[in-house]
Image 1 (cartoon, rainbow, N blue to C red):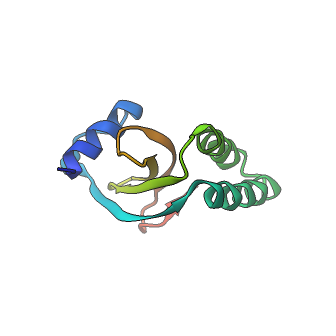
Image 2 (cartoon, rainbow, N blue to C red):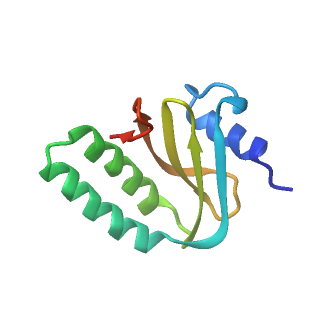
Length: 116
């Protein structure tokens, strides 16, 4: 059975900097509405916008995500978001929940706003 703990362990293998699961709120999307080709298109537009606005860090993060999406051979992806006191991450996992395909991370500011 799929649990938040199992998903967090998988993500933590990819992102060693995460602390303990108790420090985060984890939201797992159980819908299978995340299509690889659509996500690639959306994130290419977001990358263009980030580049145009001079946000090179975000542009590079998005580029890494796009490469992961382009290298994934299946069409459907799973989505997980993780929110901590000063951290927000969005992760795309394989259709079988066994691999992190790509992710974006941000800091959370004092007011709870996500900072890219």
